[in-house]
Image (cartoon, rainbow, N blue to C red; front, side):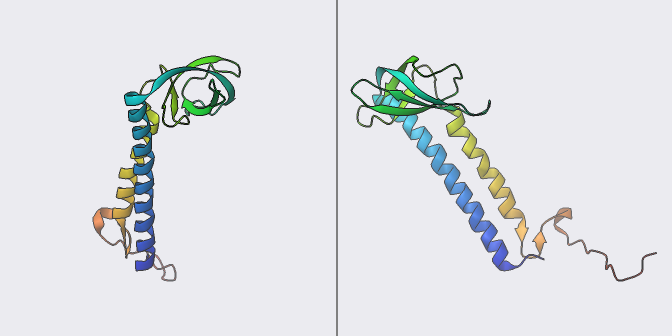
Length: 149
């Protein structure tokens, strides 16, 4: 049996997951929109690349002229230190940048939103009597101390 405090904790955790997912997706969307509106094309040189797994974007640190540095996330796996790259950089915030030609950051904007329906389904199925199952009916468990036929 699941009590009322546990149900409250699960629902609060689900709300936190939803808020975090919306924050991540909204932040990535805002950064991409700002770069699309006021971004300036600039040239830079790759300083360091942190390779990740095949399904995740690599983290690339780029040195810009004037001593500025920008960190970008890119799905490209062909970058190495010393490679010249074209970037789109926000003139007001040099740390907001993206590699030119990468396009819209679909992974960063859409994937966090997949957590929202999962959290909603999980939070809506937790009841004070336990997880809702068997069509919403309570299915009694057999008593282990009673003799079975």
